[in-house]
Length: 460
Image (cartoon, rainbow, N blue to C red):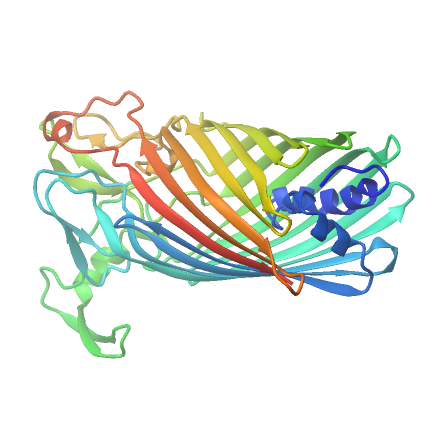
């Protein structure tokens, strides 16, 4: 592909309007389509449907696995009006880190529902192996010209999981100038999410209670997940309920994005974004906890985490695509910072190399570096007072991660596109300055995570 001035303005005008909404979290980024002359040609067809489908499999070593199916449908009407529909279905299973610290002895934990317990062996990171969920998500986006050089876009979002519901709306306005070689756009989105975790919302820093079947003699009957009659001790259930503050809670997210895109010449295009996001409400993970340890590093209790009830995130993003005689390079950089004291740097690069007229390979490298939240703590010391906020969730701790992969794509005899992607992902949590006492110095508090990502995509 070359950025031909005669054809590029129309494609950029339609695609980047949708892309801005995509970066707000409502649609997949369409900018990648600019690499493919076939996709650009399809965008010119009126009253036609274009479909993109993909199946992705993600698997962490001894942890979470995810399978995701996506289908994206786009219909182009007269006057450059575009309807985009996207359906995503995914399933997650496996084991998830609880936040508790590894110990030199076997540890016993109560399951989130309170109806049983599980054990973690000595010197191993505590993982809850009952983690599972299914998500169905639908996005719909309408884009159309509003006046000469102005394009508007509006969309809705709905996502439903077993214990989570997310509803959202978004809008975007784009203005083309400089002979349609420059585009400025502003996008807004708003999400309302409701969380109803199994077992309810725990009290901040409440001690993990014993499972229902421990210590007590008074029992009630209930049906388990397989419909089998079981017994629950009512006193144990009451003790569990005493650690819960409610059955559900909400959060809201408001985003704004400013974007500028410039066609430099027939070979090069650049994009710059600034985004601001404000999140309010329940931001804890109800399944995460912290180990309360003594001076020897031995856990004496397990306390549920507590995070602030608001978060402001900002980011700047820059992306450049350049078409050499044959190859196309795509490089981007993103810097994010927030009022939790987390900042991150992301460098992402792809190089598309034609193998023949109908096939290509695309090496991919991504590097990510993140600092820790100011309230991140891998454990709590019994000798210190309980802080206002604390979380041992490694996802908000200091880390470095990288992705290395390869994509192979081809055009089939019927003109449709087929591609395969295989990537390796590694995440390395870091110690952000916490001194581990006694036994904690002998275990791995910052265990690395390895994952494999495989994807098959088909466009028709």
